[in-house]
Image 1: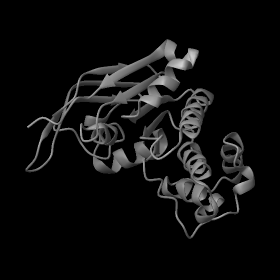
Image 2: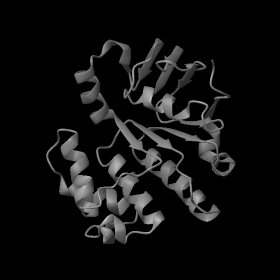
Image 3: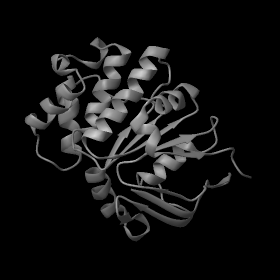
Length: 222
């Protein structure tokens, strides 16, 4: 679940972003929309505890983030948040399997090959486990990045522009994968995008549209 009240973030020497209040139940889906530069990525960073709000109260997966120091926030993020960035950041020197193992290690967990195999199989890329990122197609790389994000079975999945640079069919597949993965783990799903195809894909999914919430960000504030 995600609950925010009076949330804002100030960039040093720049704009102050003020965000609408939102309450998203655990396991529900939130579509975060708005044009480029409106603060979508900042909102995601706040939800992941990567930056601290200038003001307001922020609760994610039952944890009041305002109450945590930086060390506790890092530990919380590692156990709770699955993040799919717009730039996938797969390590070019490592195989697909090693990229997932690295995510476990970075979270302070022991390498769990069974969990890695399960995540790769669930996303249809088990046969790619020994490949390097350069040997993957764009769609394959995105599936691997999603497997890396969910290998720890997070309670919240944050996806930043998951349809960027994808054709229509691949964009629809990306949304379907996110929904299926979130459902299988009972995770709250947030998709941040300015792509109208994502909203259409969510609307077309009966289960997603039933509990879909929307948060539209309009512009940066001076």
